[in-house]
Length: 129
Image (tube, rainbow, N blue to C red; front, side, top):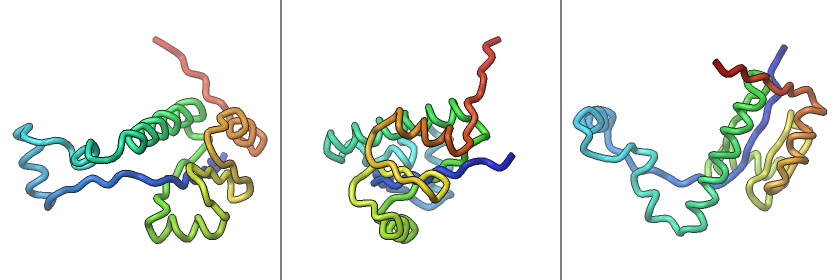
C-alpha cells in the first residue's frame, strides 16, 4: 500500500555549521554541538518551545502510523515551503496538509488523526519484547 502524504509547514530553527570535513572532525573529537543544535539557544524561548513541541508531535505521528504515512516538513521561508504556503493558503503555523486534500491549521491532534485515518492511514501495532 502506498503511504499517505503528510506535509507539515512550520518555521524551523536554523543550525549553523561548517564544512563537512570540519564537522566530522569536531564530531569525532566531541568538541562541539551537532550542527542542528548549534545556535538554537539563541532563539526566543517561545520559538524553542514550538520547535520542541513540533518535533515531539511529528515523531509521535511517525511512531503511531509507521509506514502508512510519509511526513515531509517544509519551512515557509524556503522556496518549497513558500510555494506550499501560497498554494494551500497557510497563514498560521503549523499547517498540516494531508494527501494534498485536507488542511489542518494548529495543534488539533484529534482532527489531524481523524483526517489521517479517514484518508487511509493505518495505526501500527507496536509489540514490546
